[in-house]
Picture 1 (cartoon, rainbow, N blue to C red):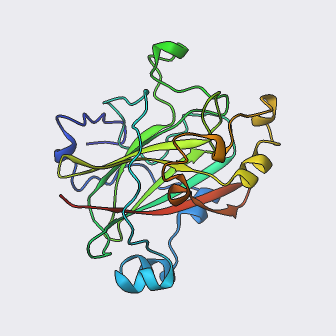
Picture 2 (cartoon, one colour; picture 1 turned 30 degrees about the horizontal axis):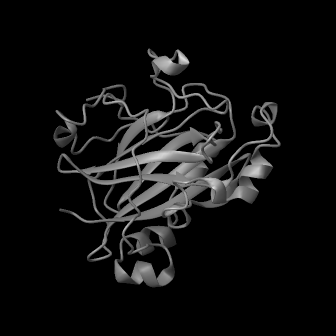
Picture 3 (tube, rainbow, N blue to C red; picture 1 turned 180 degrees about the vertical axis):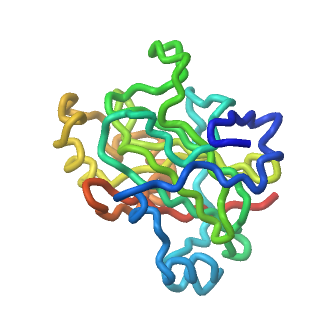
Amino acid sequence: MHDDARISRRATLTKIGGILAGAVAVGGWRAAESLSATEDDAASSGPAGVALGAVSCVLAPEQTEGPYYLDDHKVRRNITEGKAGVPLTLRLTVVNVSTCKPIKGAAVDIWHCDAGGVYSGTSVQGTEDDRFLRGIQRTDAKGLALFRTIYPGWYEGRTVHIHVIVHLGGNVVHTGQLYFPDALTDAVYRRTPYSRRPNRNPRNAGDSIYRNGGKRSTLKLAKSGSGYIGSISMGVQRS
């Protein structure tokens, strides 16, 4: 299966084991996606990783899937499709909440809106034939899935977020949303193209979904060149 293969959650997620999807990124992205030896060791060391703060052995909060999920996401690392925005590398780690050990081969499925608050693949916004900012990656031996994307925009009624579903053995083991610190979002939104849409509303505290576990689903962000690296560890139950 190649990088542009489409995956059906119901029919074929169990068949994508061993996929090495997405070309290796170049330039600044290559640096952003590289794992240091310390991070490698911590991510693979179970309870020791927890002690170092690299792995969270806490059940990831379940949240609503939302209205814009599609059942044909591509298996790929780069999901930008040329969309303008501040570069964002996502480092999403999946661990067994019972043992704190990383889970290899989990399918991590994400999607989010563009800088203008628009989702792909929806008739509501006239993007039925588009698939930007959507994709699936398999976790490696360290439980890590990497994505290249952009900092999400906002739309009325929701704080800034990324949707995520984790599949394991063809079953959904986690449905959640990932969030961003308000102060960082404020800084990012002073840049183009986000600055064209001021006065975002609501912020995290005013979002009804964020209030139900959003603090524990907030990404840790680090500056990387002109963009950011966002990391989180999601504890799931294998069955």
